Figure (cartoon, rainbow, N blue to C red):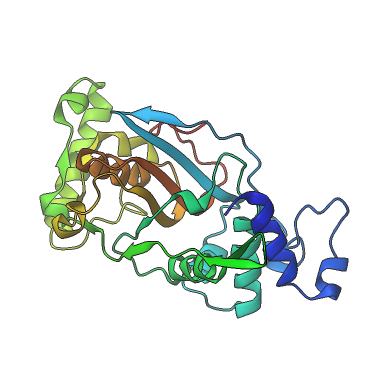
Length: 271
């Protein structure tokens, strides 16, 4: 689904009075209420080749660092279904020209409790594109749930070579953090938020695994890895790197939001 087709689809699904409220030229229909600080991502995208695989990374929006709003969107609480649908649909309708979703035939969803991920998936399935003679084609990629499984904190692997190359204070801080996570949260899933601050995430080596039953079906496939939020890109990068060895033809890391103000040095594919 090319960007023009997506945008036309979005316009057709909106009420006329809803469209008339927008600024001209159309910028952000979500400028009112709680979404007033959400900005459509207009950054350029550049395909890269990583170990022979074409890779792209894209977030639909820049999102304010508002923990309450993040939680409400992630779990779809205190917001109407219409607000959530508009947010997701408008983001999809502004995909860059270099991203044609119909090129992809496989969607991987990580182990997640996020409801918004499945809302994005619903929107993707609802898009119908038209091709000459009024013929309609429904995009129907194969979807895999729980494609990436979080490890327990006691089983997370750390890059000790990199840790040992840091200054003494940083090294001690990281080692103390690792010990705390193993002893206090050892049997819990390795969730980065609130546990590993972004500047220390570069020391993580492996905190997820790809489902082996799914991985064996990825050779030659064009894969979308679908997620909700990107902070510094550590999880995104891990999922991409776990997928590459299984021979996909291309990978698009697609998320709804990037948290504004968070650095992304951990992911060299981001511009």
